Length: 384
Image (cartoon, rainbow, N blue to C red; front, side):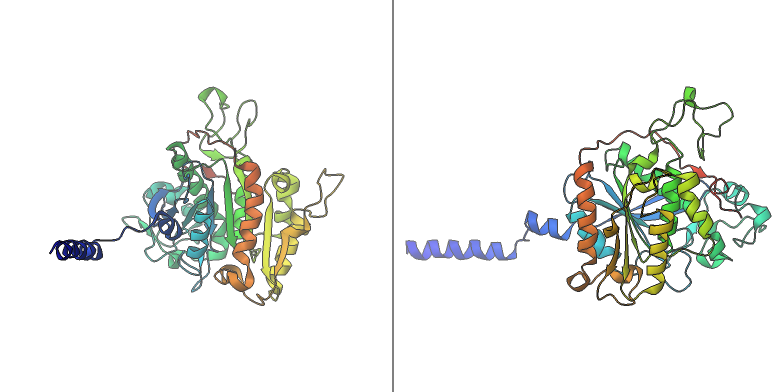
């Protein structure tokens, strides 16, 4: 009788366990990762952008941030952040201890973007009303208050304006940094195609502003505080460019709007510290002749990979120019998602891990910026 009683209790307990929800183990949760959080942020010229923030699996408040960049401005191709296996790369990075942020460029994505400040958008010094050939909608009553990719009349010539989107991303992440959500003292960029050119150009602009918002006493009377470059009294103490740990470019492409002369001037005229402080890894398929050509151009002629004694440039590690065997004509984000064969993700992580070992102790610092900065594109050689 007693045996029958205890057996009934045991069966009851087992039955209850069977119908109770099973909580995944901590290891399983870490493998799956938290879902990304959608966040909105504003550009200096009044556009509301959307992005996804993925928290690092461990110590996200002190973890570095990786910014993923798909190539903008391609009709019918990668016009939103969901194309290709960026998601898989983001998940892999979070498991390795990185926060990840990816976003849609203005006009891209499935929902378009709101123009929050119409007056600023339609009168800014680069794409103002005198230059309406870039975006349709000026002159309407009331003014058009959204932007879709189809509104951009000349996507190629409009491309430099996307640097304002990158500046807004940095400002948004710095705000999260000040809330202890991440550490923007170590930022990484991974970009594909023409986004590599945009990424390099943006890194240059980061060397022309302070990493921490200057006080009133530091600002020259004639300076425009909200613009990059910022002319600060006594010079820039800690340039924001020092926060860029490294960059990885997948099948980099130089668009025709960026001339070879302009690209080369980024070293000689704009950012002499770029090559030695912001290491870059160039990856391309072994059968992708166009990406190989442009990767070699950036490595050998822009970054001067062989070095130059007269300019004080040391040789770069030739391993940073890497052909992915077996990829053939696969390009850009197409190099992702087949790590078992191509080892693209492994190569990226090995490169970043070696750098992060040296930057792991770089502490987060309050940035203090209250708004994104407007990059003076003309100063950096981009003419309307």
